[in-house]
Image (cartoon, rainbow, N blue to C red):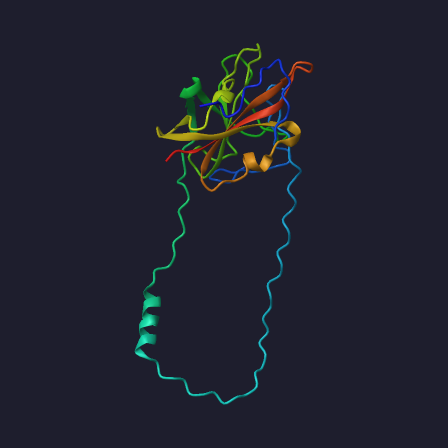
Length: 248
């Protein structure tokens, strides 16, 4: 099976392609990544929610007096129908995914990637804190996202290369194909297994914030790293995002 997207060599500029836990990931116009001088662009800030239309006010009016006809006698069929309606059970709503323990490590057998997971949140300037760029640095879990296995998009961040220019923990993400598995070991000893569904490369100015970080009904996973190395500037101009859903 072919890779979801072809890997772009670092020496070739790549053209841009098209907080809350438990299922609700906080979105902010200042939410950014800073991986090796690479950060995702932001959509225009979502428009503020429109004010709900006021509820219609029903006024009671006086009806003209009329002579009401006598009510017909209740038949046996009417009584049986009423009894059947009373016996119907109320509809039940689907239960949300159970709360999961924080992640401890991850593994991607198809590309031989894996590491312990740092737990990082936001810096004081409301940008995402990211793993260090030293050789051998692990990936991190963004603590403002759901724990992997809970409803919503859990976010893992990792470098494509390290401070010495050697491959980082997420260097081979572009080699993943649909159906590859990503396992996340949790601190309570449980394991959540996710299946890759797609991957996309986004330019900083076209980064789809809501698609990547927006809430989802089911447990999902996002792996995010840099892409689109520009040799002229020495900077990564894009981000590469792998999408995965909980197996089973």
